[in-house]
Length: 269
Image (cartoon, rainbow, N blue to C red; front, side):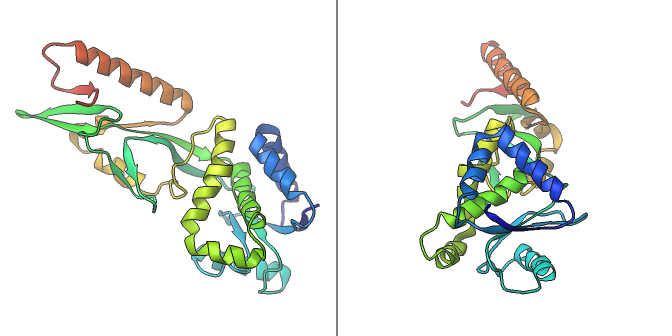
């Protein structure tokens, strides 16, 4: 068994989460099966109430608020400040809200988002008239969802997998990779979290920071005047499909009307 020590108040919660993962997702099953093989030893700390975060920690992880907090938990339980092997810290009750399947924005490597220009031939354009001027803005579409705790766990197990798939010596290779945590997270999303979400019918994050990062500000900016009609948020994939169909139908209808209406959804022009 790959897990050397399983510590914390809710060991059954951990076992249930693993079972949920391998039952619902081929990717989660593959992660767990691969980690069970010999010489891939790691520990798990199950966090208590109020400790709402997930973290994969190694001896090389020393900077950042999460790493410092995780090291404190590790030291309290293991009685040492030296991380003996990779350790996953996870709370069975921790879920988080996020924005997935994003359309109509530009995303840079840091996760920052800006609406696309209406001049770009992508997505839909909302036209709205202010006095004699017709303004245009790109329609931004997102699906708001909640990440289940078992996927949070497999996200962290994905990091354990990344660690053990590094070049030898593993600690040195991981220390080198930690110089670019954005690359680590992007790879973990691409290879682990996002396939799990696809397999279980959840929207996917385009960037690790897309819990509420950037989107709350964008939603606030889109709430001014008629511009709010260009912010399309769904709280389920079913609602997202309905929104997409409504956008397509309105754009097709407006394209046939002569003269075109002052306000409404159009294809890019």
